[in-house]
Amino acid sequence: MAVRAVRGAVQLAQDEAGHMDEQVAQLLTAVLERNELSHDDLISVWFTATPDLHSAFPAAAARGLGIVDVPLICAQELDIEDAMPRVVRVLAHIESDKPRSEITHVYLGAAAALRKDIAQ
Image (tube, rainbow, N blue to C red; front, side):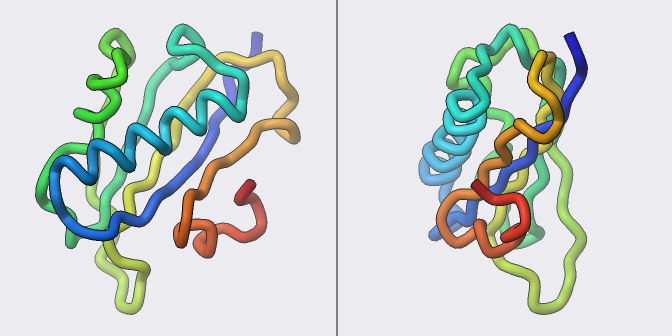
């Protein structure tokens, strides 16, 4: 079994804890489903949020999905002028037999514009 990485992002409509939980849960669920993964396939998950998000930790949404025995960490994105606002990004390290070329990266809604080259 190989270690792979899968990326994703979602743009929030507003900085509100319930909305963040909902959107991050949707993103993580899509990452797992589109890559045919279970929680047991997760090694670790990094979350970043743009500096304009203050209402909640994105990792809390993962815990709400039952991802309780996987190392999670949150960090702040660089504050780049004209960057897309209210974005949560994820980088999940996984165990998978899939070749790297078959990993599906998930960019939901407007966040698909961030990586048109790999967004599915």
